[in-house]
Amino acid sequence: VFDLGGGTFDVSVLEVGDGVIEVLATNGDTHLGGDDWDERIVEWIISEFKKDQGIDLGQDRQAIQRLREAAEKSKIELSTLKQTEINLPFITADATGPKHLNLTLSRATFEQLTKDLVERLRKPFQAALKDAALDQVDEVVLVGGSIRMPMVQELVRELTGKEPNKSVNPDEVVSIGAAIQGGVLAGDVKDVLLLDVTPLSLGLETLGGVMTVLIPRNTTIPTSKTEVFSTAEDNQTAVDVHVLQGERPMATDNKTLGTFRLDGLPAAPRGVPQIEVSFDIDANGILNVVAKDKATGKEQKVQITASTNLSDAEVDRMVQDAKQHEADDQKQRELIEARNTADQLIYAVEKSLRELGDKLPDAERGAIEQTLTDLKEAKDGHDAAEIKRLTEQLQQVSHALSQQLYQQGQAQPAGGPAEDGHDDGVIEGDFQEM
Image (cartoon, rainbow, N blue to C red; front, top):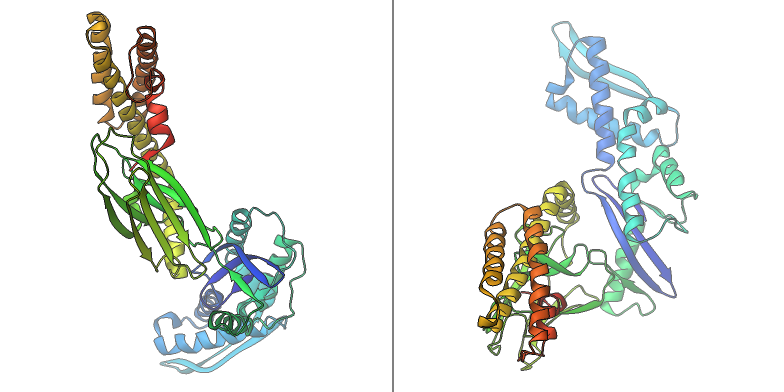
């Protein structure tokens, strides 16, 4: 669905069959519409009149209003005509008397003036197809009065390789669709089902302030997703669940939908508790989030009704914001992930050192403790590469410690020698920390 209205442009990729309409992806530009084409004609008229008469109509508010009306009329006429006359008597006056405006605008000139606007339609269309994992479509439905411009229809043919479907009136199709959906919601229409998509990704905050996505953007609803998380500290008896919406990797840069606390967790080493978090969105876009401790069965939940009712402008702003900060966000995420990995490994190695006690030679213990100190200092800095280097160095030490524990036959309370062998993998890898 290629929808170019007066102020916005929207693309929706739908799968239709057996009365089910599934939205596969959406995209668009909330700052692009027919008004922009009108404005280009206004600018052209002002420029031509200034060349001819030496008067700048851009400073005359009353004249500007008349120019906008004339520009819209010209745009409409050029959808069917090769050229149009713009005739505005008494548009202004100077010391010599009243001035009249009479110009001829050809379709070719109009298309040259607005060539860049047409090109801006290309990227959202391609992005929507990419999000839907498609490279071609079967039908293209045109929506909105501005879609009548020949240059826009030509772009649609170029992008899709198909003749646009003109079986519906582009001015009426939105109201028809709204009436059908109203009938579906009211229960009056039984044989049609509209499956919408999530406009933005949904997730929660995890260790280091990272947003962990459970339901990606453009996922068809209704849908649900469950993941298991764990604690970030020893003897942690409560976790705060921070529900987020957005496309940025860091929690602080996204929109908070809700927060709640799950308490009463049994005191245990970090990474041991298993907290099952479920996201469930129904067909009406209502999000239910449930956090459950698998050991005790205790749970807390929250219902969020505002997860899908964002305006197109809000969605577009958040998506563009993510694209604009993509490089910086990637660096920040790499740093946080490096810190998290280092933190998990430090915990595992210190645990192994305690279990080995005085069975480890002083020289070897000293070298390990020095590496631990170096990594702790690096972890508080901002050099991700240095953190990774020291983490790899400590990882080798961790493997050597695990081998010693195994060889010496040390009893392990949480599952034997294998636990230290992948302390940072089994505990921290299987379940993310909250």
